[in-house]
Length: 379
Ligand SMILES: *Cc1c(COP(=O)(O)O)cnc(C)c1O
Image (cartoon, rainbow, N blue to C red):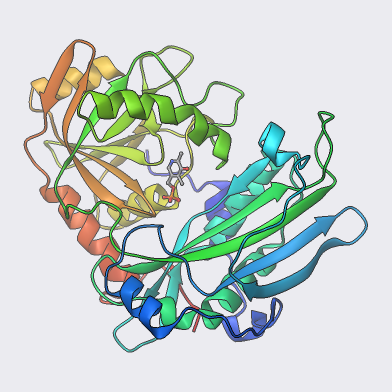
């Protein structure tokens, strides 16, 4: 059955005002302690992922009386926080991740930003965090990237990674939703997420821990889900694997996702499968884009329950030829080996995975026609 448009996709499909109309909502606070030319050159000449930050950050505060206010672009730097701030105790926090790309003509673009804006509010609804209007979300990205334009790198796999987040800053130790929140966007000039190019990663299937369970926060982008994934990831590293694939908590038998990436299978007949959105899986923008792009090129995509048993049989029988993980940070990453307590399997191929990676990054970098209207010009 063809993909049914999700609520996030519907919101993401709406027309957005141009950046020039939204610019200026977050007021630029000029300052004179931008990074020096030497610091700038050192960072841009050796891009890591998420390790260095730009000159500015976007900020706003929410209170019950004033709603979102004090929207500014201010110098990047430490945030003073009362030790009683509830985020530090109960983890009321949500985040997003998107990228600004520099095209060959020098212009700067981002990819489906209203999907991220809509998802921030979707996550916020689950964590009882007030809604941020999507146009304010986009404006914060526009204003920050315009202030930080020199930090948008060029080159294959390079981008200015943007990390919007909201956290509860009210100081109190009672357990209830806070009455004060901070919205912040920081920016990190970044190279590829995985430093070893297109080398396939090796994935450990965790049959002991889960990242999320039914009725939990699995489809919200919140730090808590990551906190629960860290120990399993250490275990997997210890065994020599790069990433963890989590199974569903209800039956411990079906594929959910990696700790921060969705997962796809490519079958011998060229069709593709991915776990359906059950509420325990994060609805990735990359997942959504890949499904739409594949369906548009005539590839069948089945969003369904995929059991570990069927995955193993499929790989052993040669029915499943490729597996890949996807998310904004790493885009598309081939999985070359998948193993668990009593199995260890290799995937022979990654041609389709490569094709998907090339198509998606070509659209993002402006090297291929954006027939889906996914790009949004920031500057
Ligand atoms: C962000 C995220 C993804 C990928 O989502 P994209 O929108 O494609 O970046 C997948 N899984 C989890 C748990 C995530 O937090």
